[in-house]
Length: 145
Length: 145
Image (cartoon, rainbow over all chains, first blue to last red):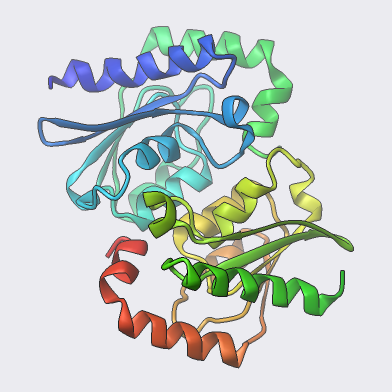
C-alpha cells in the first residue's frame, strides 16, 4: 500500500458517501504498509450521529487492537468526538486533507500527543465546500449545531 | 420518568451488558421528563471499540436532534471518546455514578461547558470494581491501553 493509496482510499470513501446521499467524509487506517480499514460518515445511511468517517473507520477495524501503531487519514479535520476517539485509543498520527471547511481541534490533538499533518487536497476541499453549501441542514446536524 | 428511573435505567443497562458477557457500562439520555434512549457498552457484543455506554446511548437516540436540551446519566465516568462526543453534540449535563473505577475527563467536560454531577452509586461501583478485576484484558482493550 502506497502513500497515495492511503490518501486516495479516504477520498474514495468520501465520494462513495456522497453517492449514497451521505455526508462526504471518508477515512483510512493503516498499520505500516497494511490497510487496516476504511470508513465513511454514515449519518444519513444509518441514522446516527456517532458514525463519522473516523469512527466508522475504527468500527470497520473491529478489535484490531494495535491502535498505537496505526495512522489515520481523514478527508475532513476531525470534530471533537473523533479527536477524542483518536486520543483515547492512542492513534499517534493523523493526516488531514481538508482543514478549510471544518477545523479547530488540531491543537487539542497535538497537545494530547497526536502528530497532525495537514495535506490539503484541492479536489476534496472544493467538493466538500459545494456539498456543504447545498446541504446546510444535514451538515449542521452532523456537527451538532 | 423520575430521577430514580434515569439512574436505575443506566444501572440496568450496565447489568444487562454484564449478562451478555460485555463491559458493564450503561447510559440513559433524557429530555425533560422523557426518556430518549438507553444504551450500553457493546464492545464484546458487536466487536467494536466505538460503542461505549454513552456512544451506544446516542446511537439508540438516532437523529433525535435536540441534544442541547438533553441530559445523560452514565454508570462510569466517560473516556475521552465519550467526553468529546458529549462536547461535540452539546449535551449540557452529565450525571456520573462511578468516578472511582475510571475518571479524569471531568475537568475537560466542565471547561467545555458540560455540567458534571458525580452521584456515587455504591452498588454499581462495587460491581464494576469486581468485573474489572476479573476481566483485565477486556477492560484494557476497552480503554485502549
